[in-house]
Image 1 (cartoon, one colour):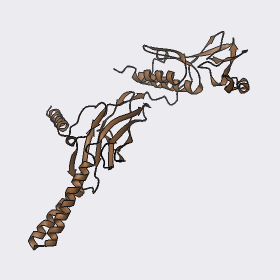
Image 2 (cartoon, rainbow, N blue to C red):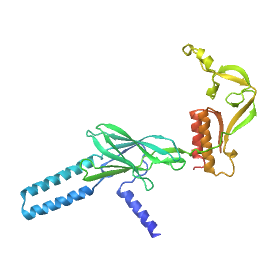
Image 3 (tube, one colour):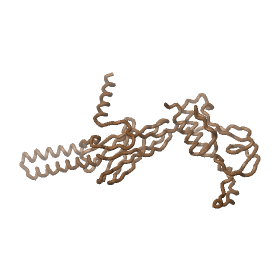
Length: 331
């Protein structure tokens, strides 16, 4: 109980001391109060050297020793100003995010905006978290310009992955001092379930149909050609007829039309999955089937909880299915 209380007190003290704010919407500004600076190991060694030089100069009345000591001290003061200025008054804004599958790396884009007349060099940007390694990226920001930095974080489970807190730090120009600041952008990445590695073939149910449009099966009776419709498989395109059409004269794609025979229908339904599978395994298999159906150009219907989509194909249909899989059961 005492350890938990100490942890909470230390956490609150750290949030107050280092200005650890919640996720900030829009553009964030690193004011002077948000930038902290301390000596590095080299800086502490440099300070110890100055003390030794000053004591030696006093004991032996060395005029050149005093001059050298004060000159080095002045360099340290100037370095302190330049290190602090390299980070202070910088503006930050969250950029684009890209969806990922569980087990991959989620990407967050960060914009660093410099509205001052001096350039900024060697700014290291990276996420900080107890579960994340310190993988930082260095960047320079020219005067009156901006630069983009893409940070990655492991996507371990499906759902919304919020951006961890970001630390910006610099040791420019001499490396005697380190200035840093914290920022948590209001950004999140949608993580899809991890596709099953060795999933069974797509569930194609055989049924009788008067027309084979958008479905699979035995194309027994060729009935002619017709205009292309969204969802038609690439293998059904009538390439010979297409080659004769003049696209500049208003020609369009045409597809082969079949009647009769046995056709197949792809229905991806969570309730139809084996009962001995756990939920995450079912979602993983459905994710693989969605990707397989899209890759093979096979229209598929989708049902997951309250989400029911008719047979379709294309990026929008795939995104709707993957989004439903990612957020299923998430509050």
